[in-house]
Image (cartoon, rainbow, N blue to C red; front, side, top):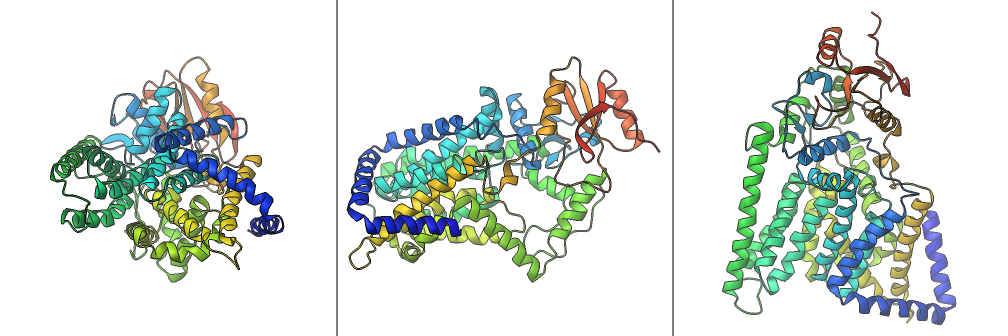
Length: 551
């Protein structure tokens, strides 16, 4: 923080001591970018391809990510399932040996998460690698948020907002450097809010499709947060239907076409979600993640929920440590615990959505909040904050639907700050420039240090597991790896038992070492495979032929 503020001070002193020289340089650059920003479609395309090209150019420094978080493997399973032409997989024989986090095995073998991120990874896998889907979704997010901002503010400011998104999320962010980011949900939020001003001016069938698609993406990526996101928009929508927004002219035919297209998309979304739930859980109204929580989780979800459910029994010690130990101990419904998890959210969301240069915008932030044109944006952001901070568990991508409104408030603050002067000197103008430059410097610093995100743990998978997987994938025959964890020295977040959609036909399988009887059944069923042992807690690089543990 201190280094950032010193850089800002040096920049402002340089602008103060040599105002004409620096003013001329920035005026030319801003004039050029403003003229380009008027080409709205071209701006979105340029930002899309800029993210793709820049991130690919940085591959020697920031390599293709290796999954390491439980959630990532669950999403990858979903993507692999989709590429096999299925929504879910049949429960495999010997499934307790393959049981793992965030994956349902009964009544089907499938990820617990909504399908949007899995679809993104499936697209990437079909193109050669799941990360390609992540890359394209991050680029599409930048374009979608730019489209949203174009409806709320002048072209040059919407271009600036899109560029800030590209810098913040398109280089050194776990949203582009892992498999569990929030780009898909952010696209959904941008489509919904970006349609609102356009609908008010001129409702069309295309806008109905855009808003409907945005709602569909939210419902299939972050259902809880997406529902909260849509509440203020729904209230505005009812206000608009009642004719209270004062449209320029009566447009009954256009309004009918808009409502028809929106209704078709929403009905199709509801039908798909019901069918998806039915295929995965056997109940059209039971979502996979709700089934997972009912079956495996006993901890609370919201700050006010206490006491948690009674502790549950599991088939392996790792689940017991995670669900009955770590999860239940993380939050005990005390003020100290509530404040601790709140600070955790502030830290995670701050690192993901903001940078230290945003502190320079604080003088203008109240003006952005009071801006009449931004009332809906502020309402969505405020309700989103309440929803996010009500949860016990929260990562930055939980707030992904609200990305576009956060960016809109930042850019609107810049617009107000730019008009501020100090005894005739355009202080606000230079503060805005300093804010943007500080983001550029911060992003460059992460690249130089080969850091994939301000919170590096979000995108630093263990390459040891990937190396073993790759080694056996190029070794003749089929292989079964039994994972033996140290009962006294195991990190509940360091899980190695994950597999793809096809268990029986997979060349390399990872299984959990359980009791002697289950292990014997497993080895008998897979008698045609070479069986190996890994002990991640002892040596995560050693692969040896399997031998049962000594009694």
